[in-house]
Length: 110
Image (cartoon, rainbow, N blue to C red; front, side):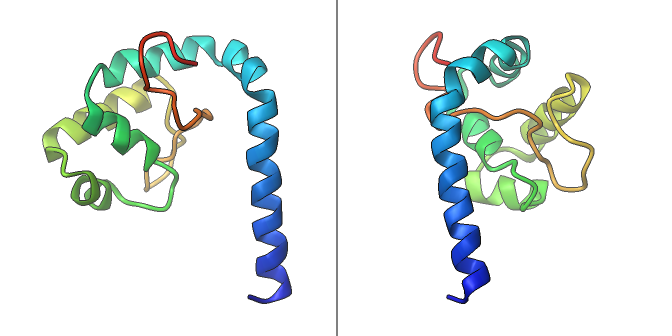
C-alpha cells in the first residue's frame, strides 16, 4: 500500500466515524427522503441489499447478479428512486442520501 492509499483508507475511516457521530442529526435532516426510501423498498430484503450496493461503482446488471433480484423489480425500484430524487443522475445507481448499515433493520430504525 502506497502513501496515497494509506491516506485514503484513513480518510474513509474518519468519514465512517463522523457519520456515526452525526447519525442522529442526519436522521432528522433526511427524515422525509428516508421515509420515501422505506416506502419504495418495503419489506423486501433483496431490495434493501440492492440499495446498499447503489454506491456508483456497480451497474444495475451487476447489482442484479450480486443480489439475485429480479431484473424487472430492480428496474422499477431504480425508476421509483430516481422519481423520488433519491438517486444521483449517473449511469450507475448512486443513492443521494446516507443511510446507516442497520437502516432497514426493524420498524422505525433510523
